[in-house]
Image (cartoon, rainbow, N blue to C red):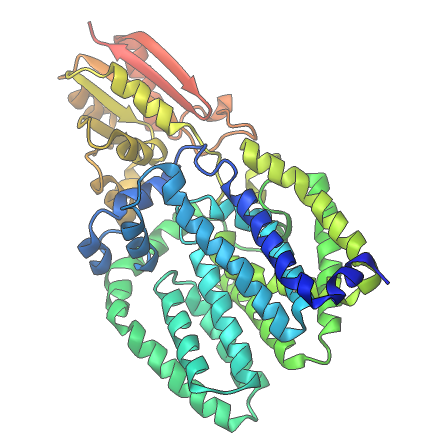
Length: 516
């Protein structure tokens, strides 16, 4: 009899163990929560929540539904520093640990629920997003709640459960548009694997109609404002999905963005074996198995399919599928009862290195292994450095939006002469224009435009930022400039001005030129 089995045989131990897992998850999520500066996406969120009216009208977020922004708007009354803003995501992530425990308990028993809670509490992927000012912890929380209520409906139909299912599903739609793929997966499950249950089908149809009606107020904003912006941006900025991308998705689900190649090459087949064992262990609970598989595989498959025409494949969009993946893996661990302690020990050791790299801001692999996750650049100190040395006759030029948006957040409107160099094709991007419009900046789109702009200023600040940085945050020499126009600007300043100051941060270089 295993140690874990002896420990869990006593029912009185379940609540203390769950509380310990929640405590573990909380410690891992709170550690260094406010240490790093807000990066581009986070700063954009922090800027966009100022006007509640604009949030509801769909003009404040660019291309996303409003729920998270509304919650963040009210949450920001507590404070607007990095720790407070990120804490909301941390709370949602901790709530998910309890809900996934509840799902595991309903499917098998409390012991299986505890294994689910353990996997989520130490998940590098969810720890990463619990420390970001984004909706990627609220989205999976609402999704797993929806799944929980659906499982309970399948076991004991009641009006209250249907109402809770509808509410959580609608809220997930108001959080992220990829909730549509999750709803599609649920419909596949109902109409293919529950087609003989006519009573359920009728109620399901009513529930789906109710969900559509409740989402109708936002559909016109989705179509008229967000659809074109989202498709334009994703087609430009994201890679096309393929089988390698699916492999990386499973890798990121299990060991996160910061795992080294040796770690994930061992971890992926290891977790896949547990995933396979989990499928086998649920052979007597086929209804729950089919639901979990649908919610894990179908959203990924649909995204992969769409990405052949539109580059929309990104792991954070699929994060809700990671929770059902964890549940199946937990079933595999529970099934291998005599090896549970060994398996949990192996998983814990596998995650030590990725978590360490996360806290140290190290990505030990190439960009394709962590696409969508970026180094935390010290925009806070960089902005303060410029503010402390800024004069009235100065101008600031950013090489790309990566530094412009965080600078707008940290400067709090103290500086107005703020410009961004954009490639000509970027000028056509409505979403990038929107990002600039949220601050005080103006676009520079050609060298003549730059010459005309800078001639009325005595000093020019050039902020060189780059998305493409190495595994410890440095800009490679071959990618010093994000575009040719920035290189032309740098050459113009070097030949016609005097550089009087220089300051370098990880992934960020600041130059100060004088025309005198």
